[in-house]
Amino acid sequence: MISGVVILLYFQAISFDFTYDDFWQIHRNDLITAPGHSIGSFITLFTTPTLPGDLFRPVPLVTYRATYLVLGLNPAAFHVFNILLYALVCCLVFRLFLSLIPSRGAPLAATLLFAVHPVNVESVASVVGRAEMLAAFFGILGCICLLRLLRAETRVSRYRLILVALVSLVCASLSTESA
Image (cartoon, rainbow, N blue to C red; front, side, top):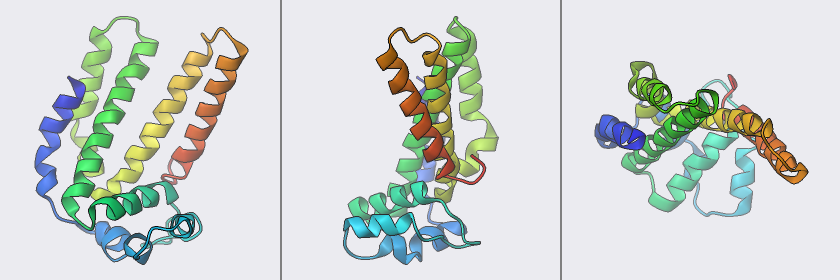
């Protein structure tokens, strides 16, 4: 249901073109649009800052590069990825709320409010807003793992949850500076 609301709400964004920073970070970025798909081209994304302002956001760059290699420089493909990622973030928000509040009504209402709140429009409708969504995805995933860690029964489960939480934190930090 949550994903359906997000897709219905943002479906029209698929027809949007690249705008503002999308041109610098994707359309005119040789790191994203270079021919070939070697491992070296992905490693370069982790070692080279991008415009504007020498941003260091390798995780979003990897997703831009992967989208480009699979579907080309089609803005619709980038927007579909953003919409699906936002739907996934909203589902994680619901899972986080369920971890904190045992009933389903309040977490569902809070998640739907989060999903439709206008403050998130720029993150979804602008392709480069993906950085904030990736940071949210990994940050919330890390929080969920830490909450489950409190209830983990075996040592192996605890170590796995700690590892996933740590990797999530690192990925969130490599998605945007504010993470």
